[in-house]
Length: 607
Image 1: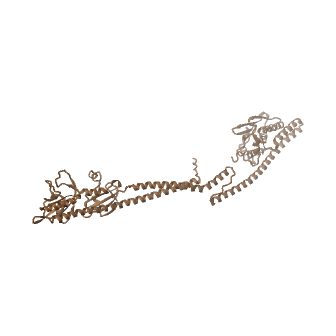
Image 2: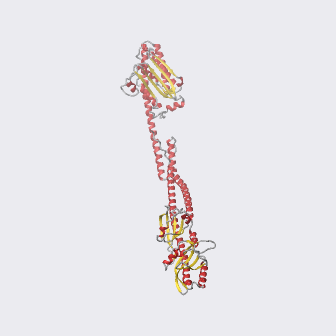
Image 3: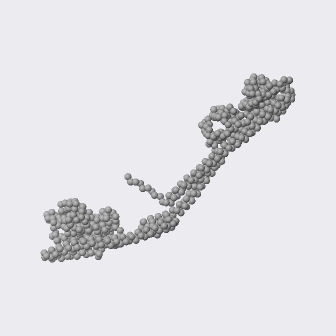
């Protein structure tokens, strides 16, 4: 299986690709790092803002609870301990204090230790069947006399209300000494704070869209306020208030919520009550500024990448342009043109271009020397081959003429001399090596006419040559040596009863021409056929037997290694010699091209 050739990119594409990858990777990495740093800072700032906000709310709530304590202290020390509960001044002072603080408190009530109502503001009737002494705020105050007690939010259900309204309150209860007549006795003071005041305060800081919320619980984890109170009551939301209630003040990161999410918890204790103000910051918090910064960073990164890509293109072009020009000039030179090798750019590229220019000049000089040497060698080889053919042919022909004259066959000798003259006229061809195939065939007929007289027409010569090939080029004197071998090796010594015959054929196939000389003579062994076109001395050669090697070599020298002779033979069956030539029309231009020393062969280098 052939390996797929890998496509090679030019240097500008490589530089541009590398710089672009570095630009994109660097820009995106910097953008991600900056965004991650900004996001971390935003989360830290959000936690810090939440902590600061909680401190503010805690201070406000502590101030509010402090005011409630002050109201409770005022009722205790300035009213209860100063006036008899049955005196008009008691009710008047209690009513006056309530009117001054009614925006913060729902009611003020005084009970004895048995839970009987001694006085209340606003003046109203207590509901029947209400057992005050069993309520938690009453029991806590009764058990711990010296302390104030804050209850969790609950519905006020002590007094009758014609409007059937129910009020959510936080009860502040304490044990007090009550003057009722001459003897003091113990009682329970109840100040119901309006829960709406705390609710409004907490609602102001809770914004569900900011990814954080705040709630309030007591020291046992009971919720006093929660922005998701409805969801909690319906089982749609859970809060781990127990963890916050037992934690010290501070920030607790990476905690797991009941829903399995990571979150940051900020705990702040409310003075006087032990309540815990808790802030919950979710990890996926997204603020408007963070979203804007993300868009801003994406825009900046895209603009930076585009700008750097333009710069990269300019830089890569400046770096690669001299190299590409040098490569283009070298490529043009390799294609056969003669451009000046580009010398420019940086010192290294100029040095490389100068070196290439000098190398090509030296190569051209050496090539000229080699061509001149090859031309001289070729001339000498052609001359030697020609000299090898002509003496053999002339020797054999003159021998035949001498034999005829000695036999008083003067008329035949005259005919042979005439044929010899025509034959030499063609063979000389004004010093040209390339002639028409038609002239070479005429030379062949002249030669065979001479040989028929010598052999007394003991063999027959037949011609089957297409006239289509007559106007094509051939090297002269290529058929005569083959015919000579056909006579000497094949039919020359055969009896007339064996019908000796030589057949000359010629035809054109595609872009090639084939001339074939066949005889029905003695044939050759396989090893002789294999060595006939070599210089192997084991091959017997008679007369002009060297002619086949010479013809084969001359054709290859003229047309290339892809052309020449092919020999087929079987003992006692005959021999066929095939001449393979290129189909080159016989024109003045083609002849000059082929005759020019140092011309490139048509199939030079082919096996």
